[in-house]
Image (cartoon, rainbow, N blue to C red):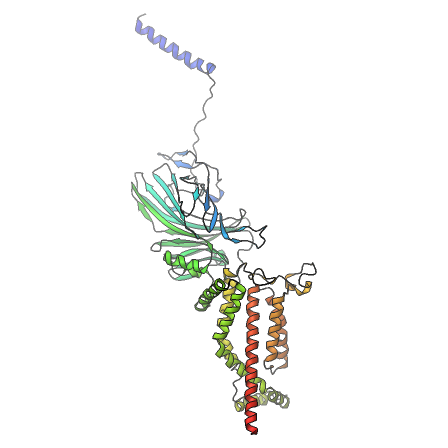
Length: 573
């Protein structure tokens, strides 16, 4: 056997020995085959949060990408605190440092804009595409963060790569009030052109009633578009399924009475905004979603999209500041000024200024009510003088009623002739009141929607002007320790309001119709029970307004009596 043959035989012998003997000398196991999964378009809500990202490799085979650990990015600014999870980057935990949920300092917590952990309410930004083969960041994507602290001076940059030609960045910054700025960037390092749209979404779920909206204030989805303000109630979305709007700039989101979550896109950009409703079991799901114009991204090019997110209190001065700073149209309309906007807005400013000046919201209400009464003094004087003249001829009207009790036609003619003879306009006292009504209702509206009323103390037992008077006459104002139903919670301020209303009626002329007179006597009692359920600040305003009216009415009455006596004196002379 020559040497070459011997080497070949020796090589095979050693190879067989290694193959057969290796498992006996080394602890090994047969490796599992790699997992190959199929990409399924599963709705984000049903995808487990701890699933690793699936990436599409060349050839269409899905492979498991290395997972980033999940971190909490801590938010800490002058006005807000909270966290953002690096998994999905949903903004759903924002606390307002300057607002407590109750007056009990031992038990109170900071207001959470998105509610507690049980409620599903969040906002998110990202990208969408009609090309379903593209792997885009989802609500379960685990981002890599360059920092875990977000503050006014410390922005955060997050990155994620889909492993198939697209890299994504999010630059998140925050100011010292209520706006979070998110800049989404995409770089295409692949070999084909792709098409993307920027996207934002506010998602909210309810298990019970959706809103506390009343005729005095609005809660729910809303937006300011190219065509103006739109308030799209939860019931409207549920009934119609989806509502769509095209806009250039503007803002859109969901409002509560005092709080707002709203996206503010670049004001020179076009976007399509849709309001959607769906349900899952006993949950009602509402979404406000926007999509920008389609943008083509060629290989080795990148694009970006900037969105501002307002998450905070509807302070009128803060809304105005952002309106000017970001160039937003009518951001103040997030406050429900109603149809009397031309009156309610300046009244709200006046109320806020008075509160800052006097240091007490109750005193501010009294001051503003006094100023409005002085402004409307000429109209009110005319009304009260007319009412006083009606009171003077009351005996003559009663005599006519007695004379023509069985003839309604002659009764009407006789009363009309009396008015003409005495030069009295029977509606003269009503018309000035009708002119005053819009102004007084505007103040009523402002007191209802103003966040300055929330948890604002007055004097004595009133610690929060935005809730009803806590005392009740039926438990001797707290001396008897019993719980009363809400309709029996008749406090001191509602009683004062009812008494002032009764006194004001006594000073005016009695209605000619006895049935109408009886009804008018019942009204103060009805209003007392009704106003007992209203915020104490409204009752303070109404009571003080009545007191001023009584004083004004008394002065006009005295003036008319003196004038009458003077005429009689001159006549006798």
